[in-house]
Each structure stands twice: as C-alpha cells, then as structure tokens.
Length: 154
Image 1 (cartoon, helix red, strand yellow):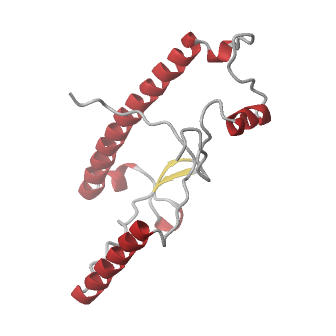
Image 2 (tube, helix red, strand yellow):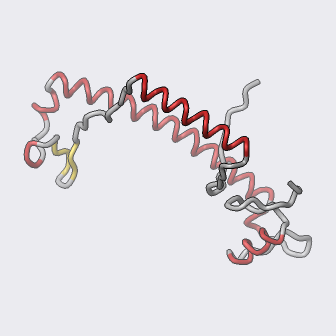
Image 3 (spheres, helix red, strand yellow):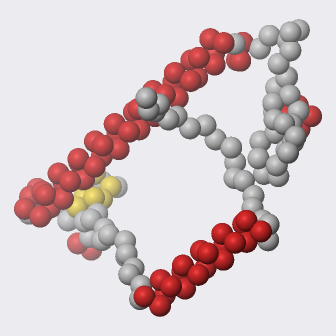
C-alpha cells in the first residue's frame, strides 16, 4: 500500500488531499510556513500531550479509588450498617443517599459456561474466521482513530 493511501474508515495520512479536505471541513488550515496557528504551536501540542497524560493517570487513580469504595460499601452492606444508617429507597430498593439519588446493589452479570460440543463449534468458527481473514474472503473496516497513552517498558 502506498504511504499516502487511505484505508476506508481510517484517518487520512497527514498532508494528503483527504486530510486537507477534512481540515477544511473543520475550518482548520493545513500547516504551512505562511500560516501560524497558535492552537498547533509546539507549546500548545506539548500542553495537550501533558494534559492527556495527566487525565490518563487521574483515570487510573480514580478507577482504583472507585474499586476500594465499592469494596468498602459491600462490606458495610453485608454487616448491615447501610440498612441501619440510610433510609430505604423506593419500594425497598437500595438506599436513599440524596433526595433524587439511590445507592443500589446490582447482581453481577451472568457468566455462561458452555458444553464441550458448543466449545468445539466455537473453535471451528474461530478457525474458519482466521482462514477467511488470511484468504481474503473476510472484509474489515476500521473504527474511528483515537489517541492512546501507553507506559514504556524498558
């Protein structure tokens, strides 16, 4: 595939006619020596990357804190503390923690275990899918492009 080719569903290559058209539709001029757009200065890009990294770290910290809080409330529920300290929700469902907010304990999602014959069919299907991918019989599309922040492993 040529370096400036465009795969259906993916983002165009920077500087390609497709990219210029996309930028025009968004009211953004392409990078050039004549036009200086402060939104895309090295400093602005560095700030965006720094903030993206910061948000990623905050998300990870919040996810860990959320897990700990869920575990704590589970234990309080099992001990009966929530039942003693919080009014019951509508129809006895959960606990009212604010006038319009309930704390509700939901059952876990169903996790299915299948028979050996079903697992064999699944293996056959997966093998057929791999075959069609390799033979070119299967087609694919790409979802929207996105940025990902990854830790570098030394």
